[in-house]
Structure formats: structure tokens, C-alpha cells
Length: 287
Image 1 (cartoon, one colour):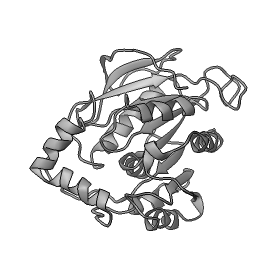
Image 2 (image 1 turned 135 degrees about the vertical axis):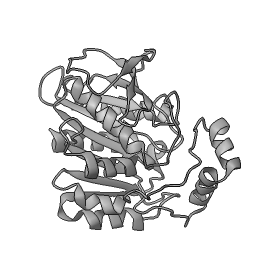
Image 3 (image 1 turned 180 degrees about the vertical axis):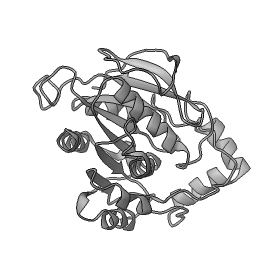
Image 4 (image 1 turned 90 degrees about the horizontal axis):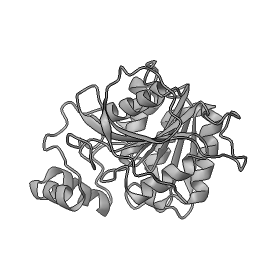
């Protein structure tokens, strides 16, 4: 069962905070490079492999896992907390709400400027003393962790040691499924953005991308040699199997592809067994 703490957001932390060691859960606002306040939560590792000790044999393992949720999610959603609870058996976990989601500031750019949000979360994990940091993203978050690893993954504070992308698109502007056509209406129409704001607690930016950001499939070749895992369900109603296969082909020998039978889309569809498999992969790849 996922453990949770009622820890209120505290003062804003910027990217210059000195490295510290956190023994318990913590929640605070982070400030991104472009000035947006991001609601973030830290949970120490619990236990791994049934031993009661995280990988590495020390109660405060060096590994932290940054979880990037999908569009219209936030760090307090039950499915995000479930993911965090399982992954905490393999390392400390940082969850956060993307801009325009939950208690975070700003407005969603649906995968463009969200790269700064991931950068802030990874930097916070390193500021807390973690020497190994992996990112695990779902759907929109899956596309963002790919772009983050390609564009910022070698910077000292924002460096990633392993990347997992679950249920991510390979290319932008895809409208080939009914759920994606509905999502485009939500993002591009004033009435849709109202539905997003009041129905999904997601504030969506009205401006179109300019310039169009690097696509996930263009980003993937730049991630090497960082270990990369692509996970996708064969019953994903949003993105059919040509998306993960394009990403895997672009990754070449440095990427690994898991096509999961019977799995649907993103956090809601990821079972506990698969989350444990992902956790073991991350602990091995980033450890």
C-alpha cells in the first residue's frame, strides 16, 4: 500500500540550494529556470527486493527516481501516489506537478516548457544528496523525460543516469485515435481549455508552439549512452504500437523496448508487477 504524508508545501527553493541530506518526506515549491513555481514532494526510499534496505545496502541509497506524470495529472492523484509507493522500494522518489497542473504555477504547454520542470526536480534530488538520479515519465511526461535527457541530461545538476518512458508519443500533432482528437480539442479550442481548467484542474496555455520543440523520436538518439527503457501497452488507446517502435528504432542498441500485453495507457494502466520490474530495471541501470 502506498504511504502518504500530509506535508504542506513550504517555501520556494531555487536551484542554488546547497546539497543536504533529507531523512524524511519533504514537500516544497521549486522554481524553474523560466520562473515557474513547481509543487514537488520527496519521499525517502523504503525497502527493496524484500530486504528492508534500498539498493546499495545503505538506509539512504544514492538513487533517486523522479516521476513525471501525464497530462491532466498531478502529484496528489491516486495513480501517481501508487506509482511513487512502488518505486520507493528501489530508491527515493521525487514527484511533482507539471506547470499548469495541481498546485503548480504557470500554464501547461503540453510537453514543451515542461522540460524545465523536470530539470528542477532532478536538480532538487541532487541537491538533497543523491548521486544517481533516474527519470520515469508517463505519456506527456514520457515525452518530456526523453527531451530532458537529450537536451539537459549531461549538465551536472540536471544529469540523468537512466530514463524510462512509458506510453509516450513518438511524434507531435498525432490525431489518429479518438482520444487524441479529443485531447487536441481540449488544447486548441477556448471551450476545450475551459473544460481543462474546471474539469481537469489543468490550466492550458493558449499560444501555439513557436518554435516547435524537438520531437521525442528526434530526441532519443541524443540520449546515448544513458540507459533508456521504452514501455508501451499493446492496448494503448492513445498511441498505437508504431510510436514505441519508432522510438526503439531511433534508440538503436542503447535502448530497450518492452511491449506489454493487455496494457492500456500510462499510469492508470501500469500494474504493480510492471512497476516492480521498472524499479528493478532502474536500480540496475542507474546503480
